[in-house]
Image 1 (tube, rainbow, N blue to C red):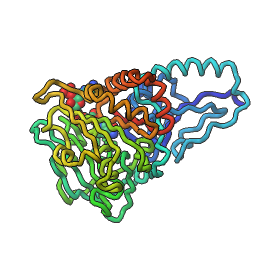
Image 2: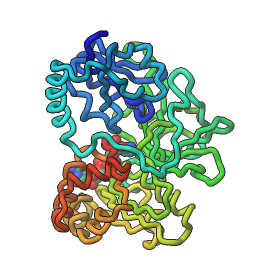
Image 3: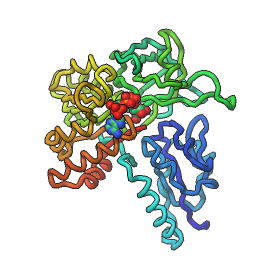
Image 4: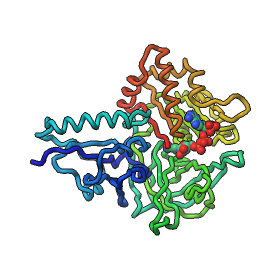
Amino acid sequence: MNKPVKQHLIDPEICIRCYTCEMTCPIGAIQHDDNNVVVDPDICNFCMDCIPVCPTGSIDEWRVVATPYSLEQQFEFEELPEQEELEGSADGNLEALDDAMAALLAEAHSGAGGKSSAPKSAAKPSVNLYNLGKPATAKVQGNYRLTDDPSHDVRHIILDFGGQPMPALEGQSIGIIPPGQDAEGKPHLPRLYSVSSPRDGERPGYNNVSLTIKREENGLCSNYVCDLKPGDEVQVTGPFGATFLLPDDPEARLLMVCTGTGSAPMRAFTMRRQRTVGGKSGGMTMFFGARTPESLPYFGPLKKIPAALLDKHLVYSRGEGPKEYVQDRMMVEEDKVADLIADPKTHIYICGLRGMEEGVEKALTNIAESIGQQWVAMRDVMREEGRYHVETY
Ligand code: NAP
């Protein structure tokens, strides 16, 4: 039998095919085909550079194997293989390797992200139904501007899938393939966007999906999408993502923390709850940060949601008042947040700018301390129970 070795794998069910890991790997060990993103066992040197950049934690999978899974095998994976039973797993060298890896992983995991699991009651998501080789063709149904700030163009794009199934759940993402080719003459890779509509469609009973997209200066795909006209056809991959999902338990309470277009999944969650519980208490609390009211996506519709359904805290960093970030308001609302994090029915969702993670973690650490708890321990339990979700770019 071969000496067991550690192998780095990517979970194809959770991976959202954003290719950030592939672009980050300094030695070209990560590649993709139409179906999956995979790690070449002959090249990967466990440098861990790809771990912290992954928005979903799907990159963080390790197996001890007698023979590494080949690239061909990994391209065919629909789900990750279980850890196989190995005779040599007490091997001294392997343990030494494990210690070194554990230290590297601890470092890579020092952010608030890391591996998460789906809420236990979440519906089973479909993933990778449409891929690079076989994308869906959607028709643009609408393209509406969501912000009044002339320098901050955020769009609500509605895509109709006609007869093609697109079973996207709230919290999942889809990929848009920009037309044309890159500098090397290859087709562009899809760009990932969180869906902002609920599972039964932007309009209930219609096979359509909405996205919330900010026009980025020189952004290849964001400019393409923000300029789309009704009737235009778009190539779409996905859906992707299997953890940042809504619990189907109507008793579950949601603490949603977002910045800018990171509000997309929160809109989907809120609409799903609104459609399922009607005007009753939705058990949802939201901290939503933007530069100004004029640059906050969905400002008008959000204001109209009854407080009983959604307890919303809109905060502004460049508004008329003092600069405020979501984590500052969480501290102001310390008692509310403490009540939520102490409740085993609470699920936390954090989405938006990567930079917000640290501040939100600090706020949660302080708030947990105020009730005599250690946030890191609470967070680990929540994550394991599928109640703690971070998706930041
Ligand atoms: P933005 O307008 O640049 O920022 C939104 C707000 O966040 C601003 O008030 C900004 O304040 C504030 N902010 C900046 N640094 C912060 C920090 N360290 N802690 C807390 N708040 C902070 O946002 P955007 O351009 O819409 O970008 C949203 C981000 O979400 C993008 O990076 C996008 O890729 C990401 N996103 C992620 C997902 C996902 O994960 N599924 C989905 C959609 C979008 P100041 O600028 O005034 O400092």
